[in-house]
Amino acid sequence: MRKLSLRARAWISDICYALLVLVTGCFFAISCTALLSQAVRTSPVRSWTNNWDAMIIAVTYLLVFIISIAFCVKRRVAVRRRLQRIAKSHHSIVRREVPQPVHEYISQEFARSCLVSYESQPRNTVHSGWGRPGTRLSGIRFRRALLDTIAEIDARARLVIPSHPSLKPHARMLHHFRFLLPLLPKDEEGLSELHYYDSAIQLVRTVDREPTEEEYQRGMDAAASILQMLRECRSEMLEESRMQMNTTISRRPYPR
Figure 1 (cartoon, rainbow, N blue to C red):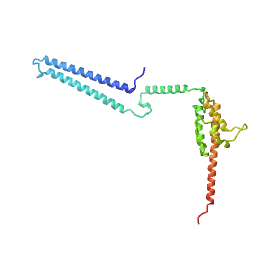
Figure 2: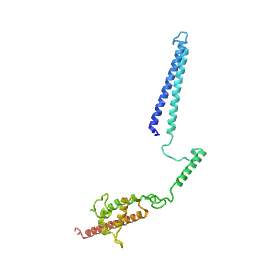
Figure 3: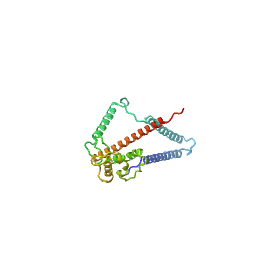
Figure 4: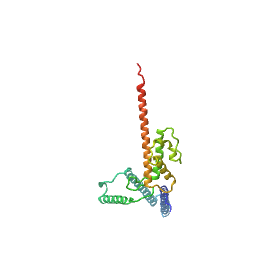
């Protein structure tokens, strides 16, 4: 069954309270009218003049009404003042603020909650496509982490090659970063880190199963090697540009 929202429950509570006040007021007025009419009918003169019974009834009902209103106002003011004394910001309860049994109970429940939370943590659990808990890869999703390296490598490549083509959503990494191939060393099989990186990206893009930790590690190592090469190229470009600028300044004749 669907539960009512807090706003709906507050609205229903206000309506019920208003109905209760209205019904109580109606019975109050009806009983007062009935007693006053009874006092007039039983009076010897059957009139309001010099009718002390009617006056006593009216004064009694008036006092009851005034006292009831006073109690309601007093209760509302007391509740508002007590709520205003409650701190809005969170602060810990120290020993002197509550009785000793209450403080001990709170401490025991807090310790129990911490123990339950600690014991509930997964251990020796392997979830496909995620790093194992307790290792340096804990909490890392292999597929997402590998795909996130594409934008980082592309941004670095544009610093080295400003005319680098725009990245397309489903482009092969081997084709998109083809201008980086001459800058990357090759192994004995004639493959560069870009080839291994392209294989890892194609794996996470097209294969239904999640990548293993070894596949993720190989892809991240390839991405790190490519990024390191781009950083070195960027540093060499800046150093060469700085040397050319210094040479130009040194060759410029000084005005006499």
